[in-house]
Image (cartoon, rainbow, N blue to C red; front, side, top):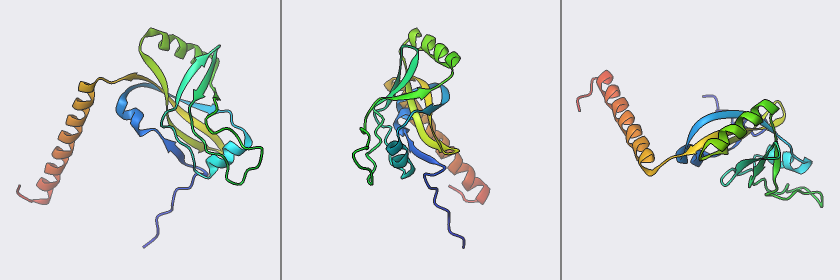
Length: 163
C-alpha cells in the first residue's frame, strides 16, 4: 500500500482560521499578497503561523494585517523579526476602495481565513465577514446534525440495513 504523501508547507496551507467560519457569515473572499521580511518567510516555510486573533484594517488607503503571529525563526540571529508586527497586504486599488465602502456600511470586518504559499509567495485568503448571532450558530449546528443523520440513513438504506 502506498504511503500518503505528507503535505509540506512549501506549497500548501500553512495556517487556517477555523473559528472565523464558525463565528462569522462570510460575505466575500479575496486572495492577497503579504509583505514579509526574510526571517518571516523562512519561519512560514517551516509551517509555523497562527491566525487565531488576526484581523485586517484599512488605513490611509492601505490594507494592514494585525495580530498575525509568525514565531521567530529558530536559526535566525539579531535579524529576527517581531512575531506580532503589523504587516501590509497587497491588493488592487479598486478592491481596496470597494472594501472600504462595504466596511463603512455596517458591522462588517476583514478576517484572514487561511495563510498559504503559492508559487513561492505567501498569500492570505482575506474575507469580508459579518458576525453571527447565537441563534444563527445554533441553526447551523442543527442543520449540520440533520444533514449528517440523513446521510447516515441513506447509507443504511443503500446497504440494505434496517434501522
